View 1 (tube, rainbow over the protein chains, first blue to last red):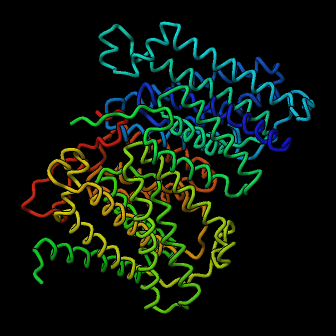
View 2: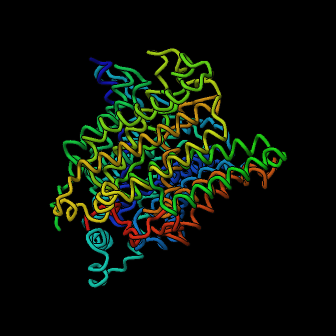
View 3: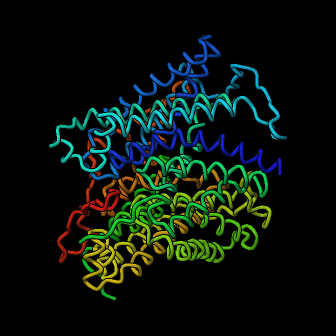
Length: 294
Length: 335
């Protein structure tokens, strides 16, 4: 039983990190209906910047995290400006291809020797790992930090979206670009802000990921990105609580299958569950079923 | 059998191209390396035409095409490795088996998931691709001959340019005839507007599944040829990144254009190799970067694809006016 609960805790840690990435996917999808395949690579850049911040340049951890978040926010805005905005009103598939291009660009550019280099890097712990025994459960300080930070960010995001004008603008743009324009919303700025927030979240996720699973390389973003994206679809893409719910489920599925069934079959089982869920809920767990109109 | 004038010209053109390549082979202008690249390009043409049917003509967004390519490669490769010993008859039988397995799996998975729409369908097929990849990595536990995560080698390398070229030509004619048949027209109408097609009395599920099975069987056929031309199969060659390759070939060529798919597939394979040569040893690291930039720039310059639904006249019948594809199908919000 203790073993099971510890696995659940590990799954929670993983799920919360997926949630940080999934939020970026789902927010961007909400405002521009684009699967931003480059998002997982922004996460990778965030992990590297965090690593350079606290391990190479010797910045204090919060400053390193903040640097990574701000830089990635900027990166997200630039990506949108350069690669997606020219295609915003083109067929959706064009922007998707562009996103694949950006993803490859970030991966290969990061692999260049004068950027991050092609090798695996081991991330030193910025603080010693502490184990606590709580009611027979082993809890690490990393788990507590991940839990607190992600929860804090989720609350902040919720406040931003439902209590500020920017958030209202984002919700408006998600419904209809032209109607939003008519209501005096600056659609371009709002989309840029959405990319900035999503990318900053991915960067935070990246740094936390590098601390919790201390090995990074330029292609590390592919799988977590894909999983987080799948989580967003599982919850119903474009819906923020859905992304968090999907990510938590994804984290549990992965950890529990690794622990009790087979770590090699982990990905297969996770995606099999995704397909099954989609067959019964074609727009995800919390997705609205849209009525077909002629 | 009566062949139209266009088909005859097409055959003549193909024969000319074939003779040209043969002449270059004998005069030594084509090194074995570039021959391999050319063969690879033809294999990719077959696979990409499969996705062209599924996505370009029927509008069903698939991100799992490489899974079927891999299923065909492993099926044909393993069958020929165990039973074939380089026998030509068995080579063709194993190719058919590869295509059949890919098509059968496509039928089983397509029946339930083709009900999904646009991005959700894309993600379901992407997920299926990952399941297949995990299967390939662990397949050696059931059948040791598959080699699992370390890859499989030992398939008789009996495919050569002559055979691959003839197979490609057959596939191009097959796809052309399918697309301009009533079946193909029904598929195109589903891409343009599924509800309208339904109202006009088209059994949309049937045609969607038909296009999916045919397209995936072609991917399986391409995979089978690949297994007989490249001695080493590895699960990583058939993962979702490979599916992206097929997708971007079909999109960059222009949805709803066979010509676009064929030209882009060949151009894409050669671009990657030419980059390797041009950059040389010192700048080889830049290959991925330059490739990514070319990809982004070309899709921004031609978002509708190079051929955007237009067809080379020799591939299209006279009596049909070509309509350019609307290329929607992928927007999430059902508008």
